[in-house]
Image 1: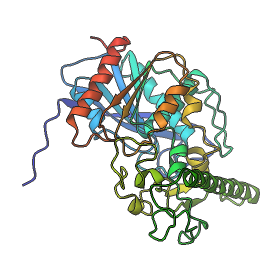
Image 2: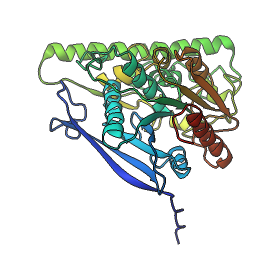
Image 3: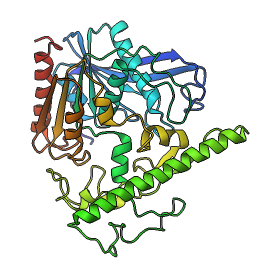
Image 4: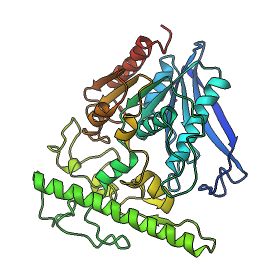
Amino acid sequence: MAEAAPTEAFDRIPVIVSFAEQVKMTETYGFAGSTGKTFLEGQRLGPRGKPSDTLYLFMHPASTLQLLPMPTALASAGMHVLCAGSRYAKNDSPLILEKVVYDLGQYIRHAKETLGYKKVILVGWSGGGSLSLFYEAQSEQPSITHTPGGDPYDLTAAGLPRADGLIFIAAHLSRAELMTEWLDPSVTDEQDPDKRDPELDIYSASCPNKPPFTKEFVVRFRAAQVARNRRITNWAMETLEKLKNRNDGEIERAFVVHRTMCDVRWIDPSIDPNGRKPNWCYLGDPRTVNVGPVGLARFTTLRSWLSQWSYDKSNGKGAQNAAKITAIPVLQIVNQADDAVPATHNPTVRAALGTKDKEYVEIHGGTHYYLGQPRQLKECIDAVTGWSRRKGLLAA
């Protein structure tokens, strides 16, 4: 007999946000946006008998978060939580980051104008961290009028409402920077992943470079990862331009990026050390996930690559957006044994943040999802609620 699920101390309430939008291109084709309207689906976790003027808003560019430990634990602690799905929920292959930023703004507006919350705190967990930085940067200092693919999309005219606070938790610099640090540099032919440079093929038993890797090899490896990202970016830009010039009705193209989960850190724990276990990443054995179907950027499109994965073209890079945030308080929570977020990313965000009102907390032994870690999860929730009260964002 299946074990009964524990009773939740909150109600799960559907949240649907819709808006009309005139856009040049609809990446979601026959789904959201096909009728001239965009529909967003979220889930509010409302603690029973505990009204609040404060809402904690979680949003990831592509995932839905309402079943994960962090938001449900926060709701169980009596906080009101909204897990917001973007127009690309569970399908990031066509995702345009600039449009996700707009989606996030519609949730904040809905939370205040329709749901009646007075304060909205962005909780940027995992991939939602860089999204939250990007959003707040554009709400404070809007600058984007076009996507990296060249399509008009004006965030300067969007009137994005500011959040009241931002929590950056278990989060990386950006999708573009993270994926580049995981991109397998041994691939020499994007059409044939079996053609590889043996000196960079660190998962192969025949690779002459073995852990512990020399500093010189790591520098070479990292440079080759950036070079591969740039080759794909250049091809995407050239192909997009070719399609525009042909003007025959084909305006976008999908493609596969092979081997995108390869990092020297995963098999050499002496590189950027933290408490993570060796020969492991958050998806499992890195040698397996490097070629699996769920690797980052595995399926993508020309415009989506430029917007979310391109090292040079993406507008979502963490440090540049963190520097523009000056108007709200920021709390960073770092899981010291995170097996997804590199140990170098949070110090970079911390140094770049423009706001003077920032705090930095480390959860010793905390992994990315806090699986089997009730003590670390509680420590995280206590840090969130304590900071919120000190900043006047949550009633005592």
